Length: 289
Ligand code: ADP
Image 1 (cartoon, protein in one colour):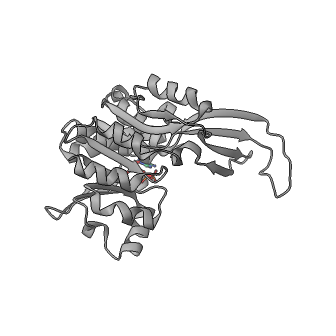
Image 2 (tube, rainbow, N blue to C red):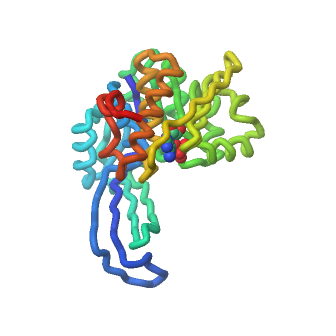
């Protein structure tokens, strides 16, 4: 199984005639609300890839719909707490030209308790996968506990913060970063991605594909991306990560897990939207790329 300590956000997208300036009051023309957050996206991707994904997270009283949607998408939500703080949300203004402005409120995502975390992980089994990203609190506690329990501890270093990565690095078995994050990490740590003290590292390279490093065997392997007409790259990285983890969880060789994840991410960039449109295994198997 996969255990995901992850964010759950309400993405509120407001269509506006222009982006508001300081002191301006502006009426939006339209509101659409979506399920978002890197954590939620990864959980949905893992579940659609066929794994049992336990999401460990928190919402407020205003977040029932998000939990219901995760359940509907096949995610195990029994370890999502309801707290007396608002659900994390993003207020996204989009103007006619597609330019945006985003205000992010982490809310319940930063109020997860170590008790809740401990209770959830006490039900994990040795060899299960634990995934963390940088949108919740309790990251170090989770990484340490995961290591103690014999879980495979994975980290997606996004949104990038050098101190956050450094503090979990000693407990990681697997690290996944995009190209920009890899460069930031190399600057912060003084080490190339291939030399980081983590057994397995994937650097995703957008339309260029991905590169996999196995530091035990000193192997590097390149995976070219599928050629598609991208219309919206939001959620590509989260889809890729969820699929790679699901592959690992089901005992696939890494190269096969990465290939499948690239198919899923390539399909994802041809669709507009995030969690709601993450492809499932059937899409991944049947879509011609
Ligand atoms: P992030 O979204 O985290 O920045 P990337 O942009 O590196 O991550 O994308 C993650 C993966 O999604 C890539 O490794 C690739 O497999 C796939 N992908 C992203 N953009 C494209 C694209 N334009 N065409 C095909 N595949 C893509």
